[in-house]
Image 1 (cartoon, rainbow, N blue to C red):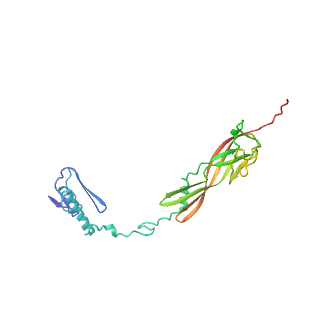
Image 2: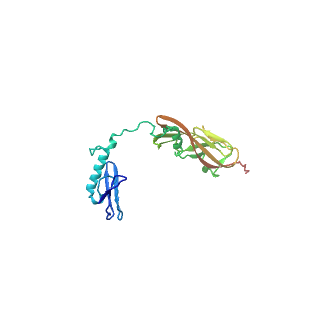
Image 3: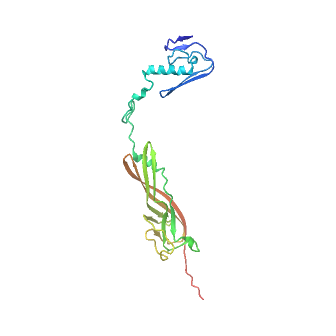
Length: 258
């Protein structure tokens, strides 16, 4: 027994539903679920099929719902989906809203730079103090400084739907010698045992301590990060650090009489 709802014009079933059932229909990109729970009566016929879905086999229910949807949208051809005729919006303005601000690649590059890991660098000193019996460098003796590590690194990052190609290149290293002086080197030469006479200064990056002491050499490695995105390009400065401990002592000659 069914009665028409005077407020909505839909048809309500006056019978009591038996059992807990669920009918599910998948079609035209949507999923519609009809739940009929035990103990509830008065099913709202929201699709206007005119019958209680609980009394219809699943296949027939799906067909009725499909026909109802086609009639609602004016679709006579099952393959004629409504959204096939929609036209995508163009431009940055959205209906009912303000224009979206343009993406600034330079801002994205700064954000991406914060996540980039620069290659680890190691401070090297020559001659190696461990080669002498005192395990130290001597006051007044020229020492060589250089770094050991990769000089470039590249990475591709995607932020806010924008792809950034980034390459970091080492530019220079500033050695804080721990005695109040700094040595900035754009190039450095590794010390090699026996390659030059003892006491030869480094050709491009070295230091001489004037006082004995325990020193920590802190190296700041300077990099330039080049980036490209959305047809634009730019560069950002970056840096990382490393350190090494060094003992500097005084050597004195002693005259021994025989």
